Image (cartoon, rainbow, N blue to C red; front, side):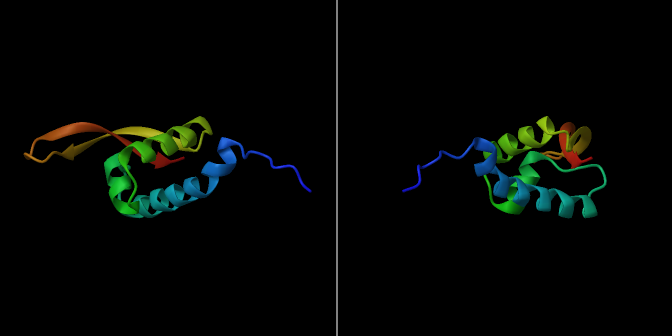
Length: 87
């Protein structure tokens, strides 16, 4: 009988990172600046908190670039926001 081995966090997160990478690649085809965490969450159906956790993992691995970009908020005011794109 084989002993059960608890998977490392990176082994569990890997498929989810792939989903996020696909969403980022697709978004980069439409948005040259980058995309916000909320835009990513909306596009793949995740919570913003979950997206941010995965973005931090990508940043730590050196695969993500954080940029500043302008977005219009709900009341029509243009504000500076953090955006993300692949390196």
